[in-house]
Image (tube, rainbow, N blue to C red; front, side, top):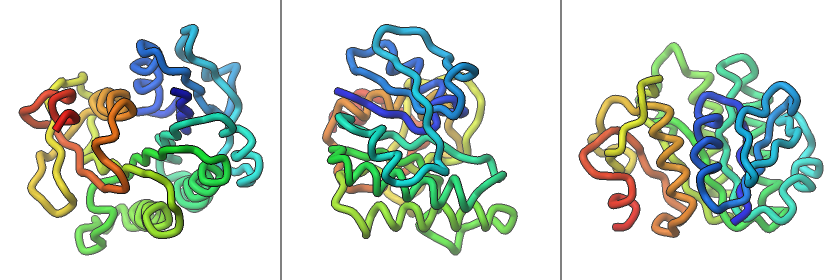
Amino acid sequence: MNIFVVGASGQIGRHLIEDLAKTDHQVTAGVRNVAKQSLVEANNVTYVSFDLTWTVEEMSNTFKEIDTVIFAAGSQGKNLLQVDLDGAIKTIRAAEQSAVKRYLMISAVFADNPANWPDSMIDYYITKHYADEWLKNQTTLDYVIIQPVTLTNEEKVSHIQLTAPGEQAAKTISRQTVAAFLSQLVDTSAFSRKTIVLSEGTEEIAKTLAK
C-alpha cells in the first residue's frame, strides 16, 4: 500500500513514520523542509516537500498513486485558518481528485459537539469541526475521523478504547499510542466513513481493530 502522511514531522507524525517504517507499506512523508525534517531512514520511507499553503492542484499532483492519506498536521495554534482549516480541506479535495482510496483524519475529541468546546480553544475547535464536516458531507472519500482525547507525551501503551462520540471515554492518550493505532488502522477496513474517539483502555490495539 502507498501511504502519504501529511504533517510527518509533527508530534504525532514523526512517531507514525517510525511505526510505518517497520511495515511493508511504501510511505511518503510530507514535510515543509526535506533537508531539515527527514527523521527516519528506511528503504520504504521517502520524504518529500509538502506545504499546506499549496493549491489543491499542487497537492493532487503529489498524491498521485497514493492509496491512503493520513492527515497528522497542525499549526499548534499559529496558523489555524490557513493550515488547520483551509489546508486540511485542500488535502481532502486533492485526495478525491487523485482517486485516493482512503483518508484518515486526526481530529480532536468533541470536535463535533460545540457545547463541549473549552473557551480557551474555541478557534482551534472551529477549524477542526468544519474540516471534519467537509470530509463527512462534501466528499465521497472512504474516511475515518479519529478523535483522540487529551494528548500526552507519555510512552506508548498497547491497550486502548474506541468509543463513539458522546460515549464515556478515558481522559488521556499518548501521541505515540495514537501513532501506533494509525499504523495498524491502515491494514483494516473495519471502519468506513465513521468518527471514532480514541483513548487509553483495556484492549490491545490489534484485538480492537479485529472486531
